Amino acid sequence: MNLDKLNWAILEELQKNARSSFSEIGRKVGLTSPAVAERVKKMEDAGVISSYKVNLSHQKTGYQLRAIITLRAFTGRLKAFLETVKTFKEVINCYRITGNENIIMEVILYDQVHLEKLIDKLITYGETRTHIILSNVVEDAPVKQRLGEY
Image 1 (cartoon, rainbow, N blue to C red):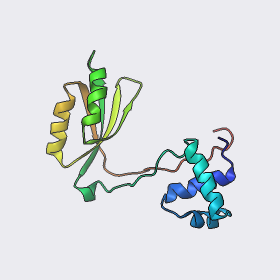
Image 2: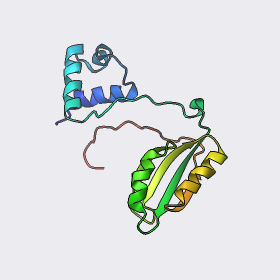
Image 3: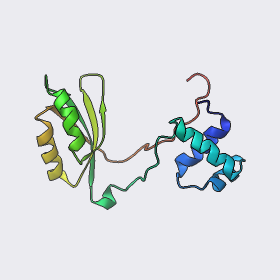
Image 4: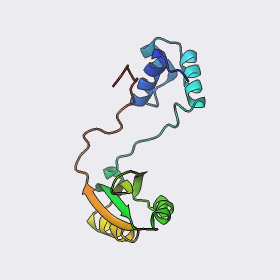
């Protein structure tokens, strides 16, 4: 799908607030509400827009710690880990990566005891390294239109 300037303007508005009405977006980008709706539908159908979601406050839902954990899987344990990690309620993002480690995870935890219990589960699959997140510097930055070479 070709994303023109108007599509990018709509995407920018939706990334700011996915609950914005089509008429509100239309006023900002210079289109009618039906025109915005049509463009959004086309972008959904093409897979450009893959979902809409709610961002929760981890702290206000009881999770006081966030951490990044890397895992270097033991020989023969990666496949089992890839299936099991999907069942860990603490893991909010998990990526298979290149380099010395195989996996990087973002996790949310109630406290240090909860972290220790999670690490105890993880070390059966490989060697871990844990980094406690102190604050967000950039979070959920919007995807922007590519302009020429980077």
